[in-house]
Image (cartoon, rainbow, N blue to C red; front, side, top):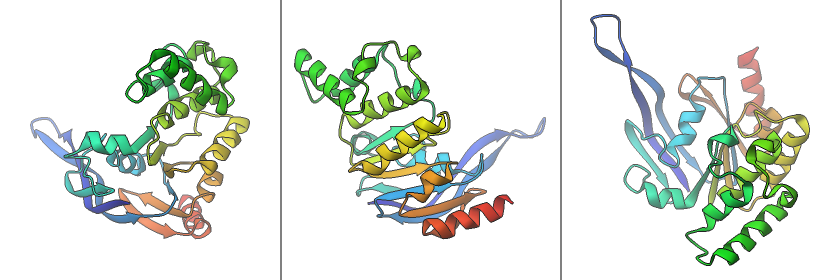
Length: 234
């Protein structure tokens, strides 16, 4: 289970001329247990929801308080946490590091499948399961936005993480590909924790939390929490 215990995140910022450095608070005193299978965070840009997600695999370290993922602290056991937590970014080009989807998924499988030919066969099978067999050896720059995001997701899931964290995964996608990714996320066996502006995607969750000014301001069933967020934005 994911737990946040009194977590705050502060970063240094330059002060006025001659006044040195100050601090900016990105998250303030967040305490949460997240046992649900599907959890969504919604909030305006700059609200802190992406920072909160990045705490869960050690991309951001808490300034105070503690984060636990199945009892492991990302600050002291980042490697162990990252084996359990897969992270999908908004822009798939920021994490597709190899020239083709096939090579990228193969890279993910290197630790678990030593034989090169077996690894390539396994990578092809995983891409085919996502409907990407026809683009497996194409340049990632020739893929559509939806194909790139599915390729990135396939590479992350290739190592079979227990938890998938996704930071605004549908933001760069058109309607068709948003619907495809929404269906894929719904069908996964993993616990899925995501931040999103896509309120239809958030509505699929078991629990929705609204982030504003670095704090959780609403937390509950999707209908209730989304209504609170929409009222805030109005």
